[in-house]
Length: 492
Ligand SMILES: [Zn+2]
Ligand SMILES: [Zn+2]
Image (cartoon, rainbow, N blue to C red):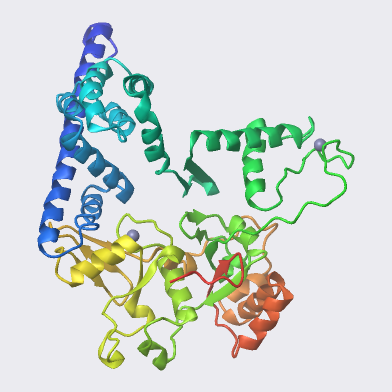
């Protein structure tokens, strides 16, 4: 590559070109958003004429879009909402966006900040902010717009605040390397209260010798508020820490209700295959074993088949339900990550309540995990009202054919973790495993015994007793779903 100055664009030319390209991208994004809103309207109109309820008609457009351009359902939902808002409420913003004078983040800033504004207020404020946004970055657009709204309509602020507060939520999503991202929209005072409390706990409950950063202590304080201990334990390591609580003892931390799918070999430390934390994704073998230490176990084997009569009841038996959820891991729709525990178990071939023998059976092969929205999508598809085809194959792959001809086949995420094809040798175990430990990988007999032993080690005496009573035969070498709070069945 030549680096002679006369071959390169001058800095002025580079900046000029950058502005042009940025504007072209913005205009193209405006068109993309508009197309998504159009698809939504088309699907909604079609489905309304076919009798789909007004609350749900068109909601599958986001799934169709996600499948076609590989974006999450949430992202497609957001884009559709933005497109509809631009068309129906934010005309000046729409125009500036379409011409590339403002970009997607600024269009979003305007639409999100104006979401609760009345039509009268919009008429005065929206054209002004669209012009202002051409010369300001998204954060400043939001701040300025908020101030304008207050100035233009101070009386309406209470109503807008109520409306905004109605959208409050808390959400936890998976982040990198076994961490989670906690996100919340709270009323401003509530948010401040949470922050003040964390700040106070971080600064008053640990002494100066605590090795954690302020940020780490605040994060730990949030967990302490949730797990029932209610206070931070100082990690200075001094028995005489001035900040340690004297007198009454701190209550024990409450265990979270989480579901982890992990292969038996990994749980036993014979392998280090990753495990599946439901709704989050892969976690490392060590973390899975840590979670397993105080857990309740469902043993899932590769060849489990329920009794024939169980297939004729509508509600699956607990065992079948646990197995289907463990194998599927999440909702089986493309791009959907609703954890299996929060999904419906949907009959692929419909169950016949009047005559169970002639309808779809309640078996593992005929059941699949679907979140409410995708359960609805399939029910409406089976009624012929949205043009989708959802085919659930005997090997648990599910084929989703969209009305516009796209097709995506999803595979059960959980099964991969429960029955990994390629064993990963243990890297976290100390030293080299001796022959007696390695042998079970070839001959399952000793591994079964080791497993049974482990189940006993990890279970409370009560669980152990009930496990022994319910165990009519030795579990085959298989896999295990760890549920970290016993006695709680996920609702279905
Ligand atoms: Zn201390
Ligand atoms: Zn779903």
